[in-house]
Image: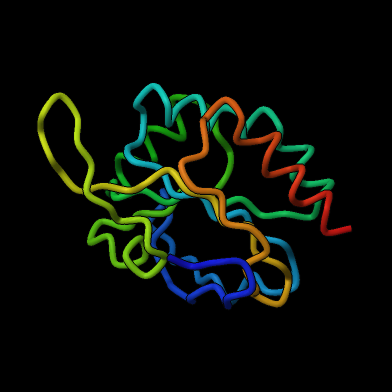
Amino acid sequence: MIEPGDTAPDFTLSDQNGDPVTLSQLRGQHVVLYFYPKADTPGCTTQACGVRDRASDYERAGAVVLGVSPDPPERLAKFDAKHGLGFTLLSDVDHAVAEDYGVWVEKSMYGRNYWGNERTTFVIDPDGEVLDAMRKVKPAEHDDRVLGALAATG
Protein backbone atom coordinates (compact mmCIF):
# COMPACT_ATOMS: atom_id res chain seq x y z
CA MET A 1 0.00 0.00 0.00
CA ILE A 2 1.17 3.49 -0.77
CA GLU A 3 1.85 5.47 2.42
CA PRO A 4 2.31 9.17 3.23
CA GLY A 5 5.74 10.31 2.10
CA ASP A 6 5.77 7.98 -0.92
CA THR A 7 5.76 9.32 -4.45
CA ALA A 8 2.39 8.60 -5.99
CA PRO A 9 2.81 6.05 -8.81
CA ASP A 10 2.15 7.65 -12.17
CA PHE A 11 -0.51 6.26 -14.47
CA THR A 12 -2.65 7.06 -17.48
CA LEU A 13 -6.31 5.98 -17.49
CA SER A 14 -9.31 6.82 -19.64
CA ASP A 15 -11.90 9.14 -18.13
CA GLN A 16 -15.68 8.88 -18.52
CA ASN A 17 -15.39 10.49 -21.96
CA GLY A 18 -12.69 8.09 -23.14
CA ASP A 19 -9.98 10.76 -22.90
CA PRO A 20 -6.61 9.85 -21.34
CA VAL A 21 -5.71 11.38 -17.97
CA THR A 22 -2.12 11.14 -16.70
CA LEU A 23 -1.44 11.79 -13.03
CA SER A 24 1.96 13.43 -13.57
CA GLN A 25 0.37 16.02 -15.89
CA LEU A 26 -1.49 17.36 -12.83
CA ARG A 27 1.73 18.30 -11.01
CA GLY A 28 1.61 21.78 -9.56
CA GLN A 29 -1.75 21.24 -7.86
CA HIS A 30 -3.12 19.02 -5.13
CA VAL A 31 -4.81 15.84 -6.32
CA VAL A 32 -7.44 13.88 -4.42
CA LEU A 33 -7.27 10.35 -5.81
CA TYR A 34 -10.08 8.21 -4.51
CA PHE A 35 -10.74 4.58 -5.27
CA TYR A 36 -14.29 3.26 -5.02
CA PRO A 37 -15.79 -0.17 -5.70
CA LYS A 38 -18.49 0.37 -8.34
CA ALA A 39 -20.27 3.28 -10.03
CA ASP A 40 -23.89 3.98 -9.19
CA THR A 41 -24.09 1.80 -6.08
CA PRO A 42 -25.45 3.40 -2.88
CA GLY A 43 -22.17 4.08 -1.04
CA CYS A 44 -20.31 5.12 -4.17
CA THR A 45 -23.13 7.45 -5.17
CA THR A 46 -23.14 9.06 -1.70
CA GLN A 47 -19.37 9.58 -1.95
CA ALA A 48 -19.43 10.96 -5.50
CA CYS A 49 -22.37 13.28 -4.82
CA GLY A 50 -20.53 14.55 -1.74
CA VAL A 51 -17.59 15.55 -3.95
CA ARG A 52 -20.02 17.16 -6.40
CA ASP A 53 -21.75 19.10 -3.64
CA ARG A 54 -18.45 20.32 -2.18
CA ALA A 55 -16.84 21.16 -5.55
CA SER A 56 -16.34 24.81 -4.58
CA ASP A 57 -14.50 23.71 -1.40
CA TYR A 58 -12.16 21.51 -3.44
CA GLU A 59 -11.61 24.37 -5.88
CA ARG A 60 -10.76 26.78 -3.02
CA ALA A 61 -8.30 24.18 -1.72
CA GLY A 62 -6.69 24.07 -5.18
CA ALA A 63 -7.40 20.36 -5.55
CA VAL A 64 -8.35 18.25 -8.54
CA VAL A 65 -10.51 15.23 -7.67
CA LEU A 66 -10.14 11.93 -9.54
CA GLY A 67 -12.42 8.99 -8.79
CA VAL A 68 -11.13 5.56 -9.85
CA SER A 69 -13.16 2.37 -10.26
CA PRO A 70 -12.94 -0.82 -12.34
CA ASP A 71 -15.98 0.30 -14.38
CA PRO A 72 -15.62 0.89 -18.14
CA PRO A 73 -15.79 4.50 -19.39
CA GLU A 74 -19.35 4.05 -20.72
CA ARG A 75 -20.66 3.13 -17.27
CA LEU A 76 -18.74 6.05 -15.73
CA ALA A 77 -20.30 8.42 -18.29
CA LYS A 78 -23.79 7.22 -17.33
CA PHE A 79 -22.96 7.62 -13.62
CA ASP A 80 -21.65 11.15 -14.22
CA ALA A 81 -24.68 12.15 -16.33
CA LYS A 82 -27.26 10.59 -13.99
CA HIS A 83 -25.95 12.46 -10.94
CA GLY A 84 -24.44 15.57 -12.59
CA LEU A 85 -21.10 14.85 -10.94
CA GLY A 86 -18.94 17.20 -13.00
CA PHE A 87 -15.53 15.82 -12.00
CA THR A 88 -13.18 13.26 -13.52
CA LEU A 89 -13.97 9.58 -13.15
CA LEU A 90 -11.29 7.15 -14.30
CA SER A 91 -11.68 3.63 -15.66
CA ASP A 92 -9.26 1.05 -14.23
CA VAL A 93 -10.86 -1.99 -15.86
CA ASP A 94 -7.82 -4.22 -15.44
CA HIS A 95 -7.33 -2.84 -11.87
CA ALA A 96 -3.60 -2.30 -12.53
CA VAL A 97 -3.60 1.14 -10.88
CA ALA A 98 -5.58 -0.15 -7.90
CA GLU A 99 -2.98 -2.90 -7.53
CA ASP A 100 -0.11 -0.35 -7.75
CA TYR A 101 -1.73 1.63 -4.94
CA GLY A 102 -2.43 -1.49 -2.86
CA VAL A 103 -6.21 -1.08 -2.84
CA TRP A 104 -7.24 -4.10 -4.96
CA VAL A 105 -8.22 -6.43 -2.14
CA GLU A 106 -10.14 -9.59 -1.45
CA LYS A 107 -13.56 -8.88 0.01
CA SER A 108 -16.36 -10.96 1.44
CA MET A 109 -20.11 -10.32 1.34
CA TYR A 110 -22.91 -12.71 2.18
CA GLY A 111 -20.41 -15.58 2.38
CA ARG A 112 -19.01 -14.89 -1.09
CA ASN A 113 -15.38 -13.90 -1.63
CA TYR A 114 -14.44 -11.61 -4.50
CA TRP A 115 -11.85 -8.99 -5.46
CA GLY A 116 -12.48 -5.27 -5.72
CA ASN A 117 -11.37 -1.75 -4.86
CA GLU A 118 -11.07 -0.91 -1.20
CA ARG A 119 -12.62 2.51 -0.61
CA THR A 120 -9.39 4.48 -0.13
CA THR A 121 -8.43 8.10 -0.76
CA PHE A 122 -4.97 9.53 -1.33
CA VAL A 123 -4.20 13.23 -1.00
CA ILE A 124 -1.24 14.07 -3.24
CA ASP A 125 0.75 17.29 -3.05
CA PRO A 126 1.76 19.45 -6.04
CA ASP A 127 5.13 17.64 -6.25
CA GLY A 128 3.51 14.20 -6.47
CA GLU A 129 4.11 13.14 -2.86
CA VAL A 130 1.36 11.37 -0.94
CA LEU A 131 0.35 13.54 2.01
CA ASP A 132 -2.38 11.29 3.38
CA ALA A 133 -3.79 7.82 2.76
CA MET A 134 -7.30 7.27 4.11
CA ARG A 135 -8.25 3.59 4.10
CA LYS A 136 -11.83 2.34 4.30
CA VAL A 137 -13.16 5.89 4.47
CA LYS A 138 -16.92 6.11 5.04
CA PRO A 139 -18.73 7.82 2.14
CA ALA A 140 -20.61 10.28 4.37
CA GLU A 141 -17.35 11.37 6.10
CA HIS A 142 -15.18 11.46 2.99
CA ASP A 143 -15.32 15.15 2.11
CA ASP A 144 -14.81 16.45 5.66
CA ARG A 145 -11.76 14.21 6.10
CA VAL A 146 -10.23 15.06 2.72
CA LEU A 147 -10.88 18.80 2.98
CA GLY A 148 -9.44 18.73 6.50
CA ALA A 149 -6.27 17.09 5.19
CA LEU A 150 -6.02 19.67 2.41
CA ALA A 151 -6.50 22.53 4.91
CA ALA A 152 -3.71 21.10 7.08
CA THR A 153 -1.27 21.46 4.15
CA GLY A 154 -1.54 25.22 4.43
